[in-house]
Length: 165
Length: 122
Image (spheres, helix red, strand yellow):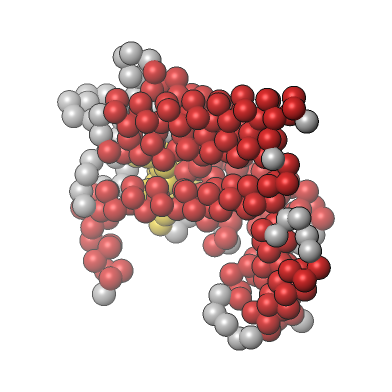
């Protein structure tokens, strides 16, 4: 049963990417894509388990949609922030590397968290060791740097915790 | 239809503006980490807006543009993460020269990181 579950998830991901790629659908392409996705999933290839941590419960899917919206809003906000820093004559930057803790347990969840942090301009994940993330931050807030950094993580964490468990 | 294409053109223009700011940032930033911050990251919003604009002008391209956006959003952070990690690994300090600010710090010491890397390789 468990083997069936992760194979189904891998199949959904593969078929989903294919459907997006061939967007003005034609039946021939659709059949070929689904047949090849099925073949890839049934064969004992390495990497089938990569998607095993994806949950398909309605609550998780709903949170995933909200998470994408939050991420896009965050990218907009941070991009404008960094763009303003670039054009200001005095160049207001104060870079350094800070350490933050994460509550996420799953590999895929931590990967998504690190990716989201790097996607928002102004912060880059430099290294992950266990549950500690080292983040390069373009402007470290002088007042209470630790709570400020924790805020970077927790705004994504509360969604990712539900999505990936 | 025409109006949508014109709006799309303006959205693309906004996207290219962000890409231009990224290019200016590469010139202005003092060290490699900060150049990466502007150079690799302004591309996220820049390319997002650009694809949305193109999608408005050519609605039949939505699928491929969506796929492009998803792949850029998955791979772009990965490459900048690897660059930053390699940069720290060879011992480049993220602090600016002559920085006296006590709040600015480097939690991940370069030497410590070097030791664990050698352990990983063995």
